[in-house]
Image (cartoon, rainbow, N blue to C red; front, side, top):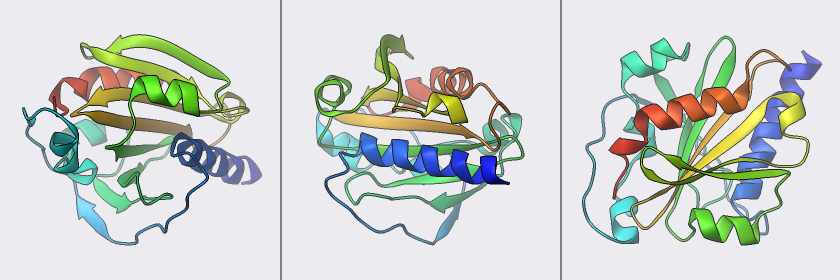
Length: 180
């Protein structure tokens, strides 16, 4: 149980650090059903502003990853709204930030790992905050709609899943649908 709590705390801390932890917000408590979000072709942050992370994943995708279809609001900082999904082996978070990009997070973040790579044909990165990898937390950041979308995966217990491999798999399978 202690490892589970530590994994959840590290993923939450990692996602909050992605959001430049100088600011704070409140987490929402509403839930939504998964659906499908059509790609938006507008240029600039406006395209990402209209993007709803809570309805992005399809129910069959979520179940194939071992996650419940029910989304929970997850907004540890006000400028990175998102949702999370829970599963037996791992949890998934999807957030957006209309003010930042993959490049700006490299300069502004506190990273143990920041490996640039193409994700779904877009600029992306696999990133860990210090100590995030040891307890099963990993983030994949992808440029989208003039901002950035953040995929976060955390194992329910230390070593329950390879969080970076899972985050990369999920991002690679879905990033092409993100706003341009």
